[in-house]
Structures are given as C-alpha cells and as structure tokens.
Length: 190
Image 1: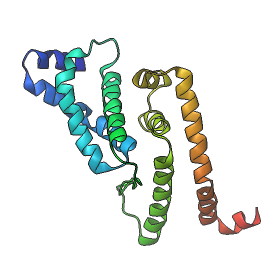
Image 2: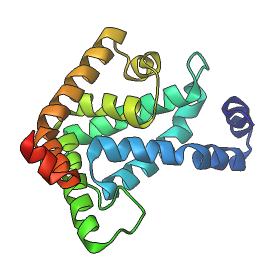
Image 3: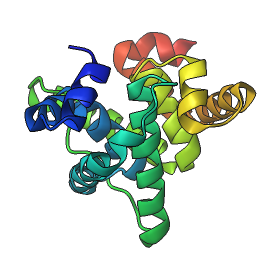
C-alpha cells in the first residue's frame, strides 16, 4: 500500500494505517536523527517526537513532493531545533557500526578505525554531515537532497564536496595506518 493511501486511511479514522506508516519509515527517521545529533539515545527520543509531530502535521502533506522527502524535511527541522536548544558538547560515536564479531586483534583495529571515522563525521558541521548522510548512506539523489533541505542544487554539491574533502583530510593518517597493516614492507619501501 502506498504512503498516500495509508495517510488517507489514517485521516479517515484508520489508526492502524498510521502505525504502518511509522513502521515503514521509523528506521529511516532514526538513522537521520542519529547522524544529525550523534547520540543514539537522543536519536530514539527525537524519532518518537517526530512521529508524534507527524500525527498533527500529516494532514498538511499535499503530495507535491514524495512523502519521504517531506518526512525527511520534518525530521531534519526537528533535529536542527534540538541542536539549537542543546548545549555544545563532545559527541561520542555510536557503539557499533558492524554486527560481525572478528577476533580480538581485528576487533581492536576495527574499533580504532570506526572511532576515527565517527569522530571525523561528528566534527563536520551539521549541514555537511546531513548531506553526507543523505547522499552516501541513504543514497538519495542530489535533487532529492535539495528538496529535503530546501536549498539550491549547487549548495548541495558544494557542501558534499567540502564535507568529503574535510573527511579525506581528517582520515588521511588513517590511510597510512591501513596501508601499513595490509603490507608493512611494501608501504615502508614506497
């Protein structure tokens, strides 16, 4: 069933239709919140708040944009409001990026790499981090991201280029460490 149909059913008194809409999109909203605020516990709370807001706002969706684009915009604005209200603090990376369980040595290396990547992402300005998440994690098109963020296409491309460049600079030392782990003798010679 399409999102439009679920919304119409909810607006005509079918409560389970809204539950299906939440079930369908909660992972998407949580991932966005987690990437924007950087704290899983806050992301869980924000996700719940966003769907509570959606109860009141869903009737204002006119269908001019895809529902997911509209929902992303609603979620993003809520996260931005949250970030404005909270005090600046150090953002800790999520506990895990991977579900597999390698050996202790490999786990330590993986943890180090993951922590460095997460810290580099967390150090990006929220607007850059948002664009990286929407493009590189969620796989949205530049046009979809521009619609969600309500900015020009050129701004999206510029933010993404700057974010990727900042990440490359921040992670450049990591590249050397990885090359050394892969082939220590070749790396030392070259």
